[in-house]
Image 1 (cartoon, rainbow, N blue to C red):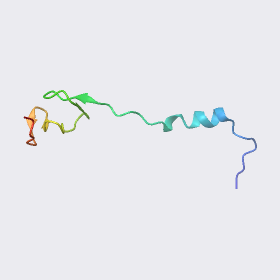
Image 2 (image 1 turned 45 degrees about the horizontal axis):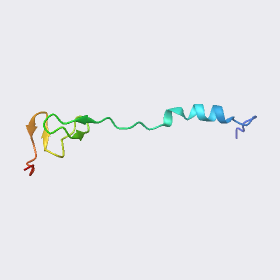
Image 3 (image 1 turned 120 degrees about the vertical axis):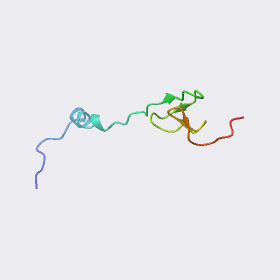
Image 4 (image 1 turned 180 degrees about the horizontal axis):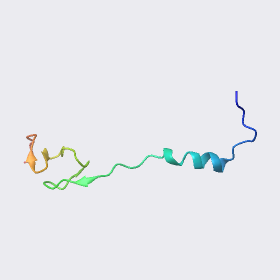
Amino acid sequence: MAVPKRKTSKSKRDMRRTHKKTAAPSVTTCAQCGEPKLPHHLCMNCGTYKGRTLIETDED
């Protein structure tokens, strides 16, 4: 079994882990109601996607 000859420094260890960070999800605004939504997803506030109403909601 391979055993490291020297202790891995904190700098080397952290440089190896840099790609493991998580990114915040991108958020866009709905063209109909202006509420924030995920891109390429249905707006849960007004029920529209690409200008078409897919879910009837009670907005009034």
